[in-house]
Image 1 (cartoon, rainbow, N blue to C red):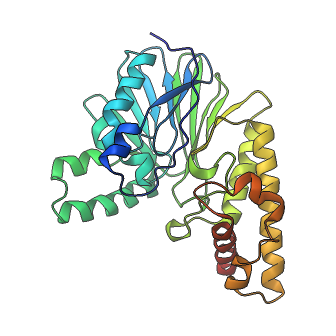
Image 2: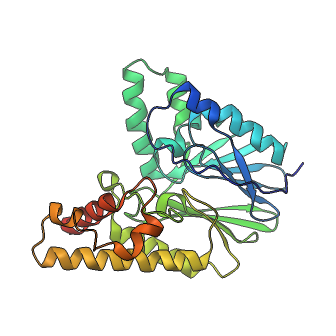
Image 3: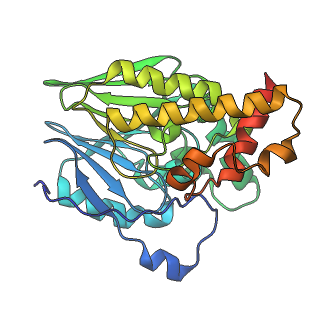
Length: 300
């Protein structure tokens, strides 16, 4: 059975490691219908993509384990078909935290090579501390990995997953549903807000911009985009987003070349003045995006 009505999504990043029980109770999983077969689920954490195929469900990301039952209930409103594939766009816990809950018999967790390595490192620490057992640890790990790209075929639909380099992290992958014309960009795109570039996990501002430009080459004006966070988007909004990032990068680079320190760049509101009102109210503040771009460019 399909759920064709759309809902206003609750905008919650869910990137912090702890929330109270009261906060958990307030999380509502909402559904946006993007095409006849593709849906976006929003709750707390990264946006989830759901594809209802001819015989199975294909899922992209899974937020936090504490929300898994709510997410399963939302998926049941879309389809009663079994979950065959769970695709992780990258390693962060607000996108992979529910892996063990969904990784059951008949389900294969898919991700880039680096995602498995980073999830393994993170979960091994929890295993050694006794927070999880060996079975849970194994179910958290992607079972099928790829280095460049991977393709799934389901009747008329071709699903392409492809790795992008040093963008949000070092293990990011985009997923494109060609027949439905829907692109899931994971955290390489935060719609309507400044991006989170995880420099410590291999991300970079140059890689993020190049990833978004690569996405533009793939899509058209009718493509629906599922961002890692934020509302469903489109080619025009992504184009404007790239322009914003390129201008911010250029302004920070000018400051660096003129001898400005990190502290001076962070405290200079003129650098991002044209964009802060539009993009600066999310998880990443204007000061933090200037800091991130400065550090990313200084690495080069």
